[in-house]
Amino acid sequence: MQILVEPVLSHAKAQAGRHLNELNDFVHFPSISADPKHSVDLKNCAMWLAGHLRRIGLENVNIVPTQRHPIVFAEWQHAPGKPTVLIYGHYDVQPVDPISEWLSSPFEPAVRGQDLYGRGASDDKGQMFCHVKALEAYLRTTGRLPVNVKCLFEGEEEIGSPNLGPFLARNKDTLAADVAVISDTRILAPNRPAITYSLRGALSLELEVRGPEHDLHSGSFGGAVHNPLQALCEIIAGLHDATGRVTIPAFYDRVRPQSAEERGYMARVGPTNGQILSAAQVQMGWGEHGYTLYERTTMRPALTVNGIFGGYQGPGPKAIIPAKAKAKMNFRLVCDQDPHETNRLFRRHIARIAPPTLRTAVRTHFAAKPALINRQHPTTRIAAIAYEKGFGAMPVFIRSGGTIPAAGLFQDVLAVPTVLMGFALPDDRMHAPNEKFHLPNFFNGIATSIWFLTEVANAGRRNQQEVRMSSAAA
Image (cartoon, rainbow, N blue to C red; front, side, top):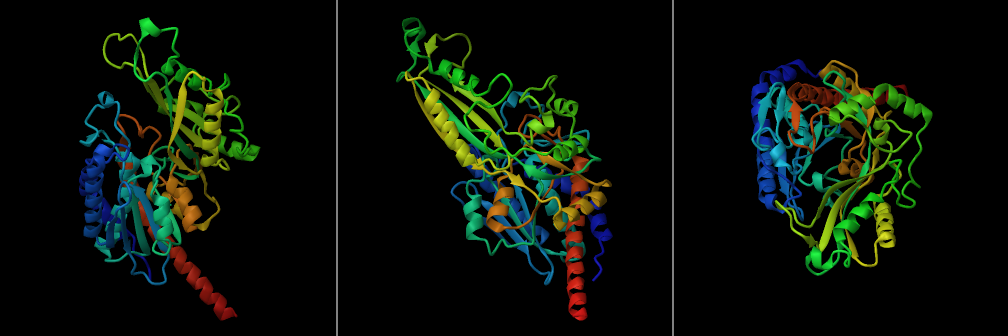
């Protein structure tokens, strides 16, 4: 049966204003997964999302509790003989600090120019909502979808998806699919779509250094008692050498070297040093010698300090030696690096270099493996066709320095081919104040998702025809 796409696309275009209003409602929830104070907000957001999925016509909609934040599942299974698409997204968001740098309230979405500003507008509510609106457009115009669909939307991605792996393992049959699609990545520009084929893994840790049982008067004890905050700074300063390399022994042992051909391709299609610096709004780069900024952020590992805490933080002076100090750190790991092995290497290194005058403790927040996607897989070619029709340009293949735990878990647990089909821009300020989502990308993303579902169905039909022809010839 011929799939008529134009009425579906026309419906989505005609409903653009309503879709934007609904995205505003979605972004309004302060669904910050890292902060326990927002646990009720995450539940309310999950309930809103589940209700929305029911209203557009999806079935078996469930809010599945986990040890922290719920997973929202929905499906539509009325296309016998057609492929099944698993759509993944996350409704949780990053903390908003520093709040003083936001030009508008992070959870009061605001449109300025062609951008929607708000925490989660791009990462990942806006991107995942593209697929929801594509499903709605099909169901409202034709009453059915061209393929079978399963939706899996979680509320813990920003804290490393700690409960997603066990959920996938318990529900492998329910989640079985022919292809998974994740939209939580960037394209190069509004007219330069991109398919991500590599993601770095992640390891987030907290290092604590403790000294006296309580803060001490710096006049009475300064120079006699080792300062935990000073020691923490010295430890952190020693984690990189002068060339930007991480100094932890054996850290680079498993880093996969890249061929000259791969590096040449990256140089041709990826962002330049200038573009990366412009997106970061800085004048000069920093990092491991011998690599471009794009290579440093995608095919090389990194260690960053995300926060440091200790001592007096209020106005004016307070002459103390703090009792303790903490630092939050994040590793980004490349293919073949194991976050659990890196965790052991870090802990061993800290135990070796920590001064005997103080006590140290390391807490692991989350770990996620890197992911490498097969660029030659048929579903990747389908995504390329969908991008060309949705954005009017063929996509290029790029690496990402970010981490999506679900991508590796889908490979390891579900064994389902996954395509990373993002709609965000490099300057969308993910994880930073004034996060935004470019509205032309939102509407083009909906069209791209519509075409993706259509092309998956067409590919399934072609495969069936090939099987019938082969059987007839036999």
